[in-house]
Image 1: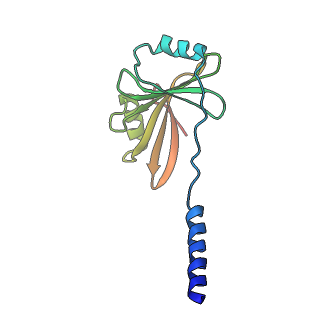
Image 2 (image 1 turned 180 degrees about the vertical axis):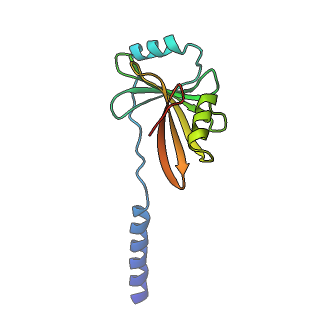
Image 3 (image 1 turned 90 degrees about the horizontal axis):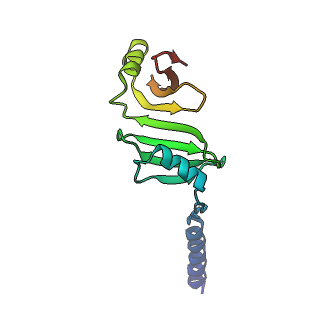
Length: 150
């Protein structure tokens, strides 16, 4: 009788622990890209065949794709179809010459972890570089001319 009770209790405990380990999968909310956003995207990036759309927490529509230069690019639009921001991701082994020269002059030997070209309407294009400076991540903002701001 005691063995049966112990086996029953052990079965219940294992059952509860198995249930506790199941993760609830959060499904993405379904949405449709408004025609104004799609038209703006197609008007600027007509040569893009495969883009993945998502929606940001602030309600902007993001298109993720590979651009004509074989770089990952993400463009962000508001609901009216106006461009909010564009990000182009560079291979850290193939930095633009002006950026590479500036970084080597100021941070010689410091590895670049990520380089993104930011384009925001009304703001001059700039680069955002993430470097690993002695184990500490640091973000730098670099102008088209190669001027570094920290």
